[in-house]
Image (cartoon, rainbow, N blue to C red; front, side, top):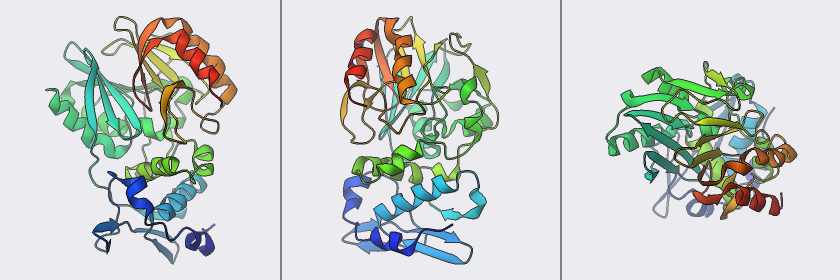
Length: 335
């Protein structure tokens, strides 16, 4: 299995997209080789099959080839060697409500709950987001020793990235819905059909670019985790209630903190379109990004009666309002 040379050549000539799509992202290079053009580092990646080596120095080529390779070889990484050198991710964090912190790493959000000096992390970005987490802890006067649990809204790699590392370094528990338990033990778990079919869109290409340059190809497999079911109140700091909202994945959930009026919606409802990048009102992820689009829409009824909340999505800005309004708005939007 190979990428035809014409596909490689056809993607060349897009260095101008570097600043537009990849501004602020990590640099990638098969060091020490590096090309310089106009003061910008042009990225270089090396992909090899057996004795064949392809070197690519253009952003769209890297995105197209790496996304295709990851999807083709999802279950057999031994067939291909991909060398990607990562730099430390820069991100931001802020306290949304008392004791609830949002970490913003580009188009990807994850959150921290504080209670009684102990911490629960809600989702875990990509592997290279680990440094952002450590910096954020220091900024709020906490350390890794304060972390008690990592709870996952679902199994996609942009939500599980550094969870296994935290488990190794802190003995923190990892918890996931039982229907996504098997998926978190695999690598490269993303909605590839939707992402690859929309790589012509600059924002979608930037998402895949971010994934590749922030640890996707290193993998984020989680070998062991506890499972929960819908309706459970988790015995972790914050004591969130689990709402099973399948459709984006089989085990997709939202976490509700009734006492604080906070809903971690994961990817059940987001406020950013992952194909166009447009920020907006609550919406179900676009067609192609869900395991079952119809189920994803129907399942929203499980959150309809939560009242007024601060909704913290996996993608996009926080939203404040009544959840029956959020569900209504999501159903008004085209798939």
